[in-house]
Amino acid sequence: MKKFLFVLLFFLAISSCSFFKPKIPPYPTGLLFPLEEDSRIIYPGEIINSIQKKEGKIFFSTEKGYIFCFDTAKKEILWRLEIAHPLSSPSSLGLENIYIFDRSSTIYCLDLDGNLAWEKKMEEKISSQIRESQKRIYLGTEEGGFFALSASSGEEIWRFRAGGPIKTSPVFFENKIIFGCDDGKFYFLDQMGRLVHKFEAGSAIQVDPLLEGDRLYFSSADNTFCCLDLTKRKKKWKVQTGGITFASPLVWKERIFFLGSNAVLYCLNKRSGEILWWRTIPSRSLYSLEIAGERILASSLSAVLVCFDIKTGEEVGRYWASQEIKSNPLWLSPYLLINLYDFEKEEGSLVFLKKEIKVLLSAAKLSPQVVGEEIGFQASAVGFYRPRYEFYLKIGDKREVVQKESEKSSWIWYPEKDGSFTVGVKVVDEKEMAEAEISFEIIKDYP
Image (cartoon, rainbow, N blue to C red):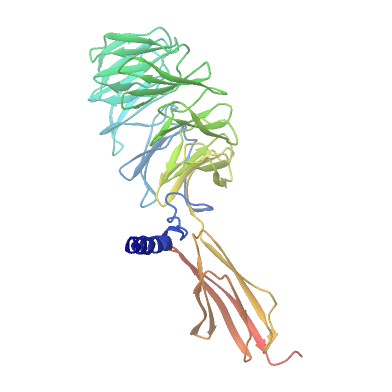
């Protein structure tokens, strides 16, 4: 019995050393604040809502009729194509093509190098975005037409007539094509364009739904957000919100996020519909959300970008732009991309933001000071996680460490001789390093 107690106490003693030791959180991933501008690219015209990314390139269009392709690594325009008419849609990316349409409902198909492959004038006004699937493209019209066209030629394959304007892009589930309509219904079509099923949503569906697995998440004009089980073809849950939505929802693990017209960002449990948290943003938003690590970002009809912890909803940062932000934020590590617009110059700006790294060093007393006088130095660091500070003293080119790397951000100096000195601090964490210096004169005695 004594032996058993001894062994038990031995293991408890060992485990207690690690059990009660505080766990150090890992280095934060994704986007970290504060942010500063790294660079920007100016282009003519105002972006149409959305930036799209594909294989290290981004694509977007402007109302003046330009389609742009940017290389994000080189931060330069690879190509741009000017369309003779004002455009109405952002760029829709397929496997090998880009699709876009103008205000007269003419569709333009480009390859990824910016070469025009074909164009087609539609007889009805296009009211949804274009989506590609299995070498076909699909779109809806104000007149209730739903069209399937050949992706290679634009030739019409079939059309279907719904009960109202179609403003949502389709999703594709088990060989079925599903789209929402202003008549409050979801239509299920087969590959031949024949009606298979109709689901009564209860109110107009005007924003692209989100398909994940066998569940379809959507908002409707009666200020509700719903989950539809596509296998059973019935609602799993419905949540009443304070406004309609203007952009498609976004899923992260077991959570789903969407923005309401009441300028609120909602986070729900995607299985049950339970509201886990909600936060206000500066204004209503037309733009899609973006995830960067465990951060979620929202831009709105304002000059402020807001960022929240994706799990808790705690606000972790804001960025104030010089002008109104005109598109969704886009995370391309280590950069966050936003678009601004100058109304006077009629120019857009693609802005690359990065984590701000800054070290400041201040002295408690002004230079000069006399030999033997106590002088305190204080360092402050921005953009570091659990920073460590190393203080050094330089005379000419000679550098001497006077306080080894530690968590202590201050140093007291008692100069032993006169001369011209440089006091410096090096700040490091697991990934970053920066330095700051102050020139200081030490004299033998005051005049």
